[in-house]
Image (cartoon, rainbow, N blue to C red; front, side, top):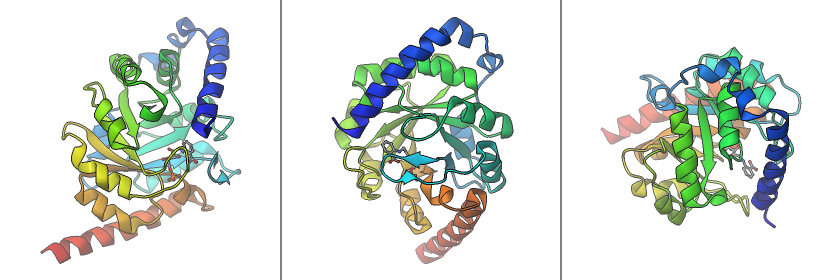
Length: 272
Ligand SMILES: O=C(O)c1ccccc1NCC(=O)[C@H](O)[C@H](O)COP(=O)(O)O
């Protein structure tokens, strides 16, 4: 079994348990359930912003512990102050050390859209995401049949949530161009081998129809790759480990952004 299969099978078991403990009827009574979620595209395209989706990440299957000692809302506030466009919060506990509590505390701490970064396989998790304060949910093409992606995306859309669909290959992309999806994220990380290459984003870009906002995900350790991604039409950049490895992730984002702005203005000057 691949790591993705293991994660999905664990998710299935955990969701069954949570559904018993907290049925949908209870989730629908949570105070945040009735709010109108923030639209991710508006924040990623806001003038003057770089489109960075900064991630709160403790550990991962590929890297083990990244940062064990931080307060999620404090990190998120640091990201917001440093100019992040959205905040991503990993909510899987077993493999990423995240939690639903991390997400709801982050939501209370910032004014930005919050992405529930998890392995969503059911409508239950989408209802839960809305109830705890997420504005965006992730659907992973490698983990779901295309018909399930479409129906979960439709369900999320009905709740007013933005949908980020993650793909890694051209086949996954072409099978999942559902109108209910808002953002298409190309994961530069192969979820089976963990190999990372930004070439995945660059190669898939011409195949992503203009109606979808493009997000490049994972392994963007070096700001120098971002101008080429922008050139290829990417408007969102999901970055976790690069910031979370540092003692002050917000400061790391501020430094990255400053260097990126310089690189972008140099690229513009060269083009002239
Ligand atoms: O990060 C992993 O090792 C991983 C393994 C299996 C499935 C998902 C995984 N990561 C989740 C993510 O999508 C990343 O946290 C996110 O794209 C940020 O990536 P990075 O900037 O490389 O931390």
